[in-house]
Image (cartoon, rainbow, N blue to C red; front, side, top):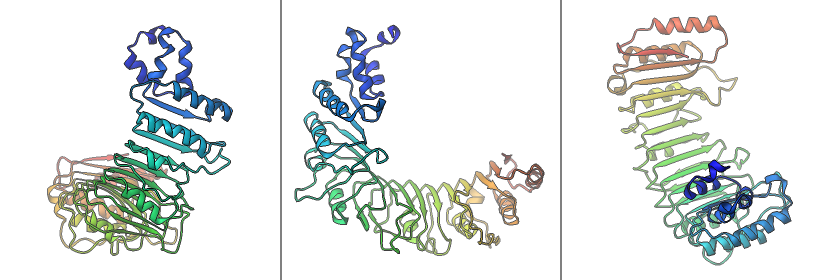
Length: 420
């Protein structure tokens, strides 16, 4: 402890900000040097499950510590709550957010230990106007006539939230005029049929839909975010996605959907540079004539029987592609046939001018897979490295795969073949 005490206050405050508030306050008994240091910590994390403290004691501890805390800038208030936490306590504590102009507020409710649904006080989204970051998990938002006001909010995360309805969600986002980062993790009973995200300032958007939420295609989301740079969509339901305008600034996209028609998504992110893609079908994946002029890094999930057709389309429509990774996160359905290799009528431009690396996970050495690897090795003029990883546990089969790949003709004399 003597060695730690010799550190500068600035360093000690950083260390303390990583600890639960209970531990932070406890340091006041160590020595005179530490007696008031905790009051200057810029980040406080209150966890009512820490050391199994009785909730009444926890509530009083939060009240007192917030009252005594004197840091000139309290940057973050983080509440991890369960048991019998309610709107009354949270309402009192969020007053500290208003009084101290706290820029970051995080409220997480642990439903596994909570006996009641936690309804957030209306003051949270009408009075806490100085918030820059707001993260909510497993709470209930209520409707009210007063306007929502988050004029400085740049980052918002909404995980497993119950809303009053579709219109409230739209009104909530419309109050965030400078919002740049939005995360929405749906739950089954969220009371929203269509999530409408119309935020001109939005740069990063992540949407995960609950796999248990099925409404015969009636639910989905509408996106209008022309400034978007990063997009992540995970939707394995039978819903829909509509993107109203192209996103010319898009850099990274992670698209994992089971919609029967996903062409609208890919058409809107035609400017993407780094793309992860998992689609239910290659048919109508995107309109004929579309070109991914900026795509340099592609990861394709091979869970669909038509993945090979989709891949060859993407190779032909991505003239600057440099890196390709083939994976299989979801696996084939047992009744589905193997993909069929059809040699393209012309060599994709990227294989002749830019394609450098291929990573293949869960390689099985099927005839179609061998045809594809052989085709890339024979035509990849700029190819530098091909890494193949097999999921087979049969050592003889693995050895046979290695021999076949090693004997393959390579267009690039500098191509390195690695078998993992």
